[in-house]
Image (cartoon, rainbow, N blue to C red; front, side, top):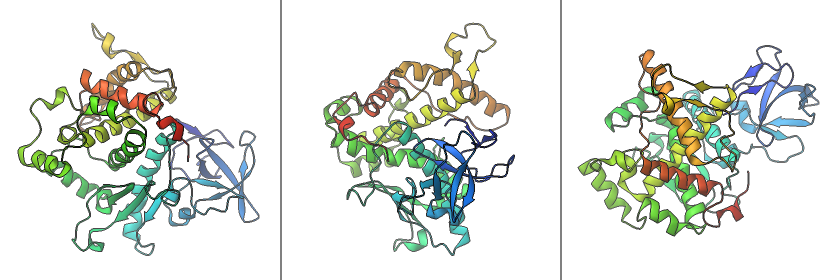
Length: 363
């Protein structure tokens, strides 16, 4: 994600900021121009402040009043929910402060995932627009007859267990399931990968190309997962898969690789915004040297340039984390086979595989 600045005073901002600490203006994110705007109140609505703001009247997403969203909608737009929140199908009871706080954490992760999808100009269709459009249900265990919410994807509806927003509970699950990386953002990026498989691969004319890379998606999914959990990861899975779970079924391999592609491009955009370069002071450092001076979202950037930069940046970030006593920021190894799979995702999202480009549209 890029660095943002206040449109009034040029103070550096975070994506989630709602007030500028320097000039004290209210702030909101406008997704279609990809800017955070400083705002002045005007007749019950807001006007963009600052010489570079471009003017215009704006209103906050309806979920702003619950403290869970800072995205803006054009003042003359009849919609009450922003481009991110219009995908919500089920949200927690507003009167339950504990659940609203968990929901807020969920929304932070969801909006970051949608940010990347919009930067890639991927389709973002709601369930109002299409019965299999993208929707989110944030559910609590005690609201389900079975007493347990299963995070997953079903024909466009992504269900996220609200308990995943509880850091302690998520860490317990991460440890018990042997996952080196388990985050809210990772959940959203993985599950939305299943939806994009439906839209860009199944419906986008890319099944043959995808099967040549990821394997047989028609293999029984339930049997495959049962075998994975009963027998453990495939031997030497690191040679062919980005994670052990990716080896369970072709669908999971695609979704895991999709999530990692999102991890990589978003973090490299951060590196570009911060002017990051890596040049280790050790002999034979060529593989770990990079200058992130390119637009990772540009069509012409090849996957090898992306993965080479990522190798150097992730190695440096892992070393910083170890110096602080934390686990590796990116505890994965990208084999040549995995890089080939990332290359498929790269070509797919840029419309070079299948006919999916014809249906691509920003939210």
